[in-house]
Image (cartoon, rainbow, N blue to C red; front, side, top):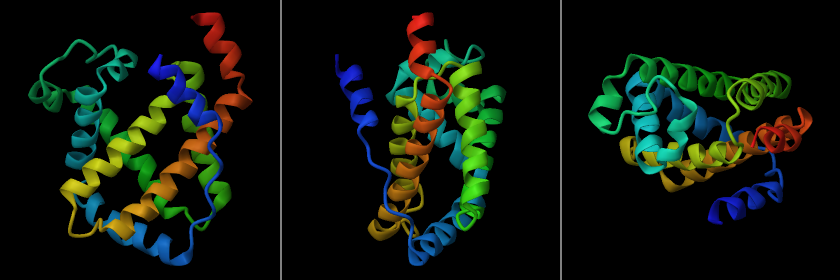
Length: 179
């Protein structure tokens, strides 16, 4: 029941206000530090996601049956996907002044996850929370509360954009016909 409620909340999220120039700089500065450790940070994020939200593994045939965090960390497929996630985030961070580029990236990600991978949109909200948690812990020297607030705004924008792509491709019809 909780899952349905959470997904309902996502439907009513308003698009956050645009990022200020100061927020963009804070995100870019903190991301530069994170991206130096791109692969390790990406693996830490996905392992945390899969450990704390095991249902999220159902979309990954290559490692959905792996239970141990250490074994997940060693999975070549997980590392490859973590790299793709971090590259997509990097593209978004680099494109914050180019709304068309951001929209294009989010449309590709949204369509692939809705149509090909059949990932429920609520997992983007969950992943956003995990990203904030891991960055705040692993990079506490650069992800201050003010920087975390800027990241929260960016990730909320990402979730809203991806949700819009899901609606555009008819996710509600797709998910009810496959369920």
